[in-house]
Image 1: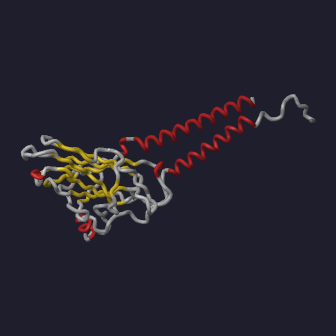
Image 2: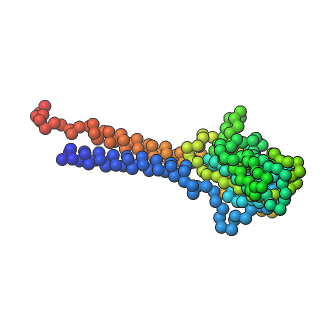
Image 3: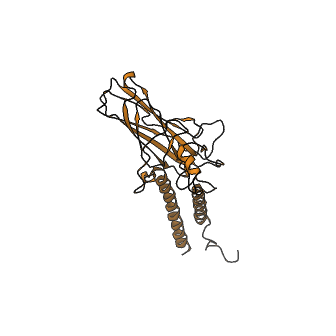
Length: 281
């Protein structure tokens, strides 16, 4: 009877242990790889600004998941600004439409660059940051996938930090006769939350948000509603505090360790006093 109960208890502990491991493993995969975690605009919110800034200080502020458009001339420097918070891996996409009515004399090379709140150029992990358009091409599509934003970093490092990020789009190679030709540009910034695997111990006191990063920010700061979020801030505010989902992994690991200890003890503690030993011994 004791042996049967011990085996039943051991099997129950083993089942709970395996279920916990499977739950933690599947949870981590869902957080990191689920495409639905990427930012997407809500119904009615997809319409973005229809102009772009020409400098860092006049960059047009956009929110993640909102598509911005602009009509410009070939050779202009176009700037947009968007917020990126800790744990997000941002992707910037730009589409340049070249009208067929404008006669071009040669190929053109377009490039999209991303800068952080300190105006440090951020490297692209992958994507098509620079592309060349043939004279008869109608569109050019560019993309840049940034590194995951860290909650904080060492002063000497160039890690991406929470705050405002600037998109700069321009042509870097062009026939002189084609300067000034009209173009239509579409830009969008999205991100995927990478989860607790990228959390670090510590956080910035304040995000890297310049006080006058755009004309929209200046007008919002001087408005009557002081509690309204500024144009360069996330709609739901910046992340802060000590809580991260790594606490769930810590608690889950502690529970699994306790179950493993109980299961190991149930296998090694034995069945009590052997039946062949006399009672008086």
